[in-house]
Length: 532
Image 1 (spheres, rainbow, N blue to C red):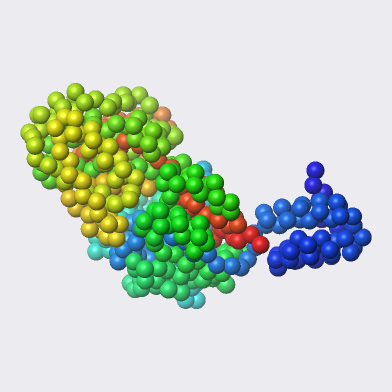
Image 2: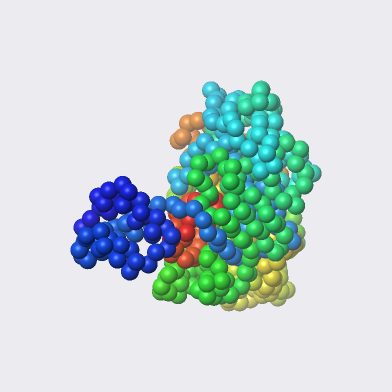
């Protein structure tokens, strides 16, 4: 067993730790230890123990370059308008939320000191005191109120407006206390405030050319579609954090080029790597891959407000053509069943029959659809896993005379100009921390992210009822009924639930999986450090 290096004594231990931190070579440290009277064997033992111990201790300093998978001129540091991983990661560098979701997706207090309620409808939120925005203003309840009210305004274009509209009354009680009355009870309110869209901005903010938050980094530069440069906030309210001096964040959209840049030492992190490149990275000394299992899924979207995709038989034909086992074998993941609650979720309905790959049923429904030989364009982002799945669907469709014309689109602008803009597109949905948030954002009739424009008054009513239900068994039954409704009539096919894979140098420490998304649920910035 390695000898405890702290038995050297306090002054010698500090000297040893300082030498390692400053990058002293092993030979230099061995020479010093042996000069202090230790044998070569004992000096080596102590040095190994010191290196291991110090490697697990966060240290300050250094800079990293991080390459994401997508970028466009629609990139934003406005939390309300953020819509994909690159936006979320940036916003978590510059802002904080009232709560923060941990690895178990439990909301922990962040800017909020406490959430208090007796009925899950009327809430009192008390803020921490002395927290400063980057411009020197102190965080107050009015800032939280402004953040919420702005989310509710249709002109803001918030992706989470469907969640914010339930906050019927928002009242500033005093400088550090806020009261919220919901339209209906919702025990998940603290969870909602841990999501990226509800990061807190300063009262009156309208200019998002740069970010002004309370977060761990200052926004030194932000150029949409190009890059951002985040620099350490010296006045951050969490003692000792962040550890890095600077994070440069940009996109290398081609995955192979992104991995090559990592292995060449041009970047230190390559986010969202497909499983097919994991082996190459893990086999290269000095690099590793972190897997985050999640409810992430690629969605096959047939719009219900457009022709010919609003034909229910065409929808069923597409779903029966999804060869889920083939996709899982080629791309990894957990088999999906055309509804968005993944099998690890506590509200997953296991009793829903698995829809099979069935060419006969697909052919029957396709014939009823009347599409015939007409080619149906399908749009996917070039190089994405969704595009790979679409190719497999195309191959299956050919066997029944269904002609799918794949249109591979560049990543730049895909989410703003292609996704949901055509009758048949491929989406990618990041996992959400609760069933209510997931269903409210992507399946509620009035949600801007209702991918297939599916509308069901019965579903909307059931969603609101489940939100306020405190009986766990009854709530589970409600969510099960909603999964059946989506499975039977929604225009979205979900073949697999996937994992996130982020590749990085082994000298980067502090990363751990959080299932809301890759890169520690987007919040890696304040948690990572570079090993000496």
